[in-house]
Image (cartoon, rainbow over all chains, first blue to last red; front, side, top):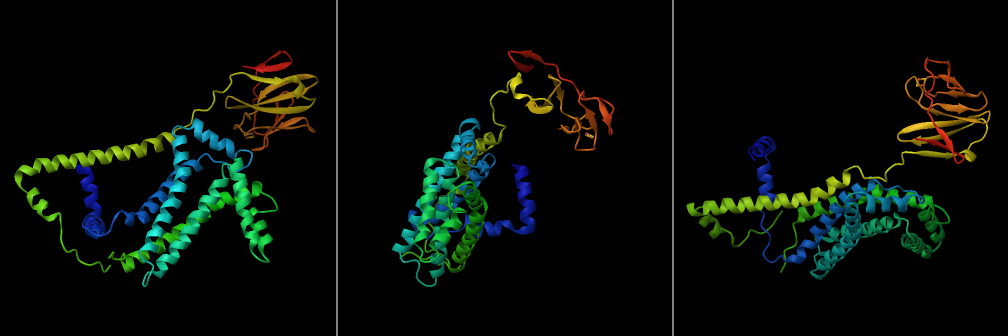
Length: 219
Length: 158
Ligand code: FES
């Protein structure tokens, strides 16, 4: 305990941690009228972080190759200790995250929190929602099961409805005429790097905006 | 952050009471409880993560390597990994030979050159003949021969 205190004091005396902690955490008072519904956004962030950590663990074993993807997932589930748990948390967490984002949006819409000066909170939030969906969609293909294969097939079929460019977009998303190893590699890179990087940027914007305007005062 | 000041602070009366001497013990106890509970929660998160990172138990590796004679052909070399070693089976003049494929210089895996009928090391250019004897390069020792038996038309290395 004394050692921890000393380490804390070392940083505190140099970077003044305590005042920042007091303002932002320990002495920060929550508005009385703010109910549980105000937690959905924060919970969505928490779920996102859970996904990042469980995802990093799964990445140690996953092989983005149609011949080995399913086996590598099964290996984690049956041979790696606690692998089943980590895999389940990651798969269920994706659904939970989408649910929480939707609940968060429903509350913001219901209380009209998107009104000026917070319009861009809403816009960035909608972008975050689409990115969350894209993360879930790309992750769904990775185990390369029947469900994921056909799910990805139908999902990549959607842009065909775009007038003119439709077929081109479909081919671009599938990395070819049909779903195959190229699709899997593409989805894998989107899922573990591209989309998380973009979503982190939008999250940062979303949070900075909230700090600048303050949260909306409930009635 | 233009948050409105809080009208009332419900925590205030309790805090005044907590400074009374008889509450010091209780406060200490609650602090310990809180710390203990945080430790337990941290542990439930850390335990799966740490155990996930342990080396997974793979299926026990077979101690015996069996290579069917039918898989060999004249003047061809066949590589097999066996218990952390790379073995090469060479089939010449209708007789199989088994070598440890690690070069006797610094341990790179030698490659069979069917045209020159030599083993060549990719690292520093050592060359061995089809008996494993050094021909040229920075080596003086021959390739290590590995003992085997032939049973049921299979080469058995144990
Ligand atoms: S390791 Fe083979 S020549 Fe040096």
